[in-house]
Length: 122
Image (cartoon, rainbow, N blue to C red; front, top):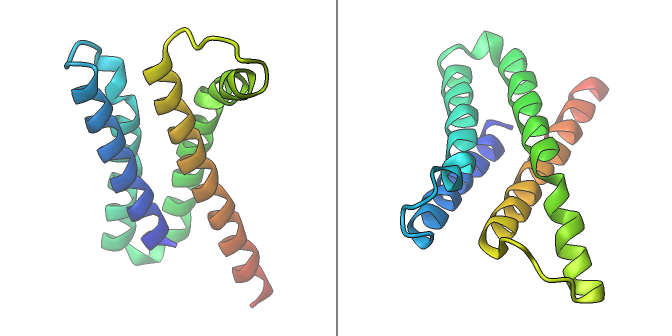
């Protein structure tokens, strides 16, 4: 499961950095996915360092990713509103970044929960 967390962490770091550059380094909030990726990456590194505590770090990572989903779910509504009725996006770059963050975090949560279910079966 750490492999998934590492991949999502790197993806969030790249996403935050890329959108920060795309905004012309004007908005520090464009780095929020990078901060989220740094937190997930940090706990993943701790999990590698202390393998006997890996389950606890996995739970913390899922909690952090859940917070990421909770913070970005409104972008899903905005994107679908744009796709269905053509509503204008107020902040298109921010909405796309939030939506991508939402997808990355949700996919990691789904894979993490599946991993927990598989571990329970053994």
